[in-house]
Amino acid sequence: MKRRYLYSYILFLLGVCGGSIVNAQDFRGIVYELESSSPLWNVTVKNLRTQEEANTNREGQFNIKAELNDYLTFTLPGYLTDTIFIYEEGVRRVYMLRDEESIALDEILVKRMTDSRLAIEIAKAQNEGKSVEASQQRGGLRISPSRVFGRKAKQARSKLALLLEEQNNRKVDRIFTPRLIASIVTLNEEELALFRERFRPELKFAETASPEDMRLYILDSYKKFKEEK
Image (cartoon, rainbow, N blue to C red; front, side, top):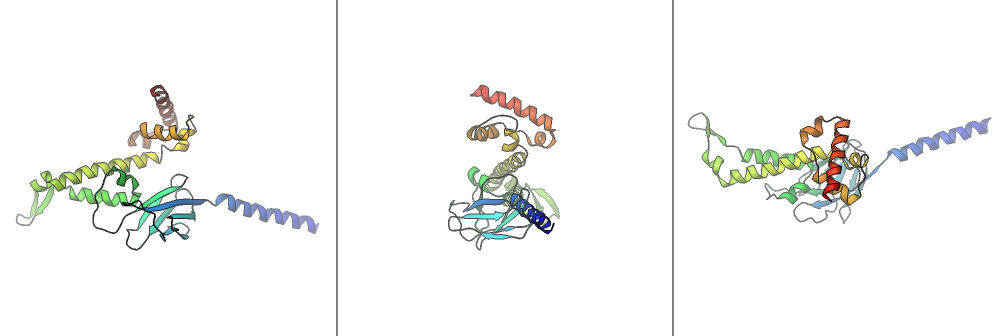
């Protein structure tokens, strides 16, 4: 009888341990400098939910226990602390920005930014592109021609449009995921990436569509994708 209870207890422990192993997930990634694309060594990566920390190796690689919907922070002296939200599986590339007041942006750099850095740059561009300024002499607000027509203002508005487009695309991509698409249509890895980029829906539709609406949208887009090929 004792032997049977002991056997049952061992099975129970194995089940608990086995469950823990299954639930634990290793989230892997590589950290680069944004402008040079060089890997960054000794970046502190922290899971805000579990408070667990890890550091990148000389190739910029890190491995930390994390789950979907966790937030990770990245800290390195001389660089701006940044945060990412885990919304899909797979190796994640993270790009950190040197702690400087401003940088020149282009489409490639914008795509490399983490969400928190993207939000900071959007706020900065919105402020730089404002066409109204305070008048110290008249005690009110007035239109500033230099802000409306100036080169800096035009660049800021152009930059803002690029940043907002990228922000919207990321919101859509968290809904229009590879897993969702693959559950409805059959595409290889290369086709899936191309399909997702070409048929990314509008943000309003992605946020309001029912599961059936999204399924029909993917099927209709898949038909067009195959016809184009």
